[in-house]
Image (cartoon, rainbow, N blue to C red; front, side, top):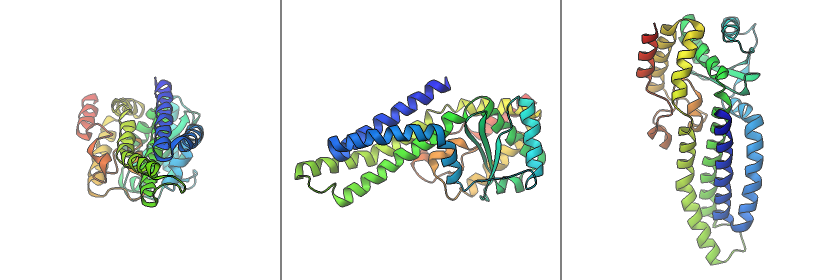
Length: 282
């Protein structure tokens, strides 16, 4: 199912970019946009994980730097029956975590410095088990590609804004300029909504499944429940700096509350309901 969704997302990106190119630059813009879409599809499949990790200035860490983190992930991956992922730490004081990669064999888990300082060992174990469940369930490819594509589509809106400022490419007649201006206005409105819809295509039910699977992997549903409560409290008070709301669905809790149009539509199920289900497991 995730393979089908990945293909559909790539097709949607191609169509949107071609339409945007046509609206902003006519036939020439459409051809250029088609080439860009092909390149974007290629890079989003093979390199989307590296793009997201670079976006958050994530640094790969070794056992000597974070011995407890390594020991927890090693034990949990053995229980889950998947290869050991690479571990990254991002210089963010806001506690959060996400998993990325195109397969369990090419996976990575990233945690913020804030989460390593805030959570107890049992709570951190629950969060890591949740991310390992995403890896085992093969949620990470579609989630990472969706983040890259949502960012690319949002970028189209920025291009449309600049197109309006400079009035399109030189040498075009008034009719073409007016058409390009209308196309730019349409893209400024449609592109962020399209990016948001791509995020919503990632089923929120996968978070419930990852919570349940993660609790089974670590054997401590209350540890994950307590961690979710702490992360929720911090995310409501201190939104994450840097990054982009286009990646919100990748995190264990939404770190971008109230920043823009993405905040109008939740990429995660209610934390209170997630905690309730975990407590019922106990």
